[in-house]
Length: 146
Image (tube, rainbow, N blue to C red; front, top):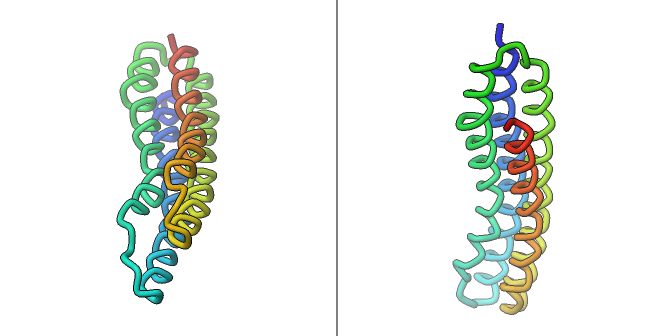
């Protein structure tokens, strides 16, 4: 059994779990903000979709890391299986936490934007900072594979 291949799968799977949780958190807030707009007879801003969908990108980072980098490394060096397994779990967890926190931040941004109609760019900058954690986790993991 190649533990490295399991690690390659886990990095993608754990990242996707985080994305799902983050999307669920932010998506609920987006729907709530739209509801408030409808109740007030205001147009529902479609820009709020950006908050709801932002955590999806972490699934791509897990996919890129697992399939394009960890899997070839694990196939080429099966003797390093424990290292790849641990890297997959650690990287996937870091990327997942980024997605969950991004969902929470996006939820606050959706609520605030829906209520005031202002500040979208400011709130999106904070959502982007959460994204940066996932990018760092992916890139630093790639470096450690090399």
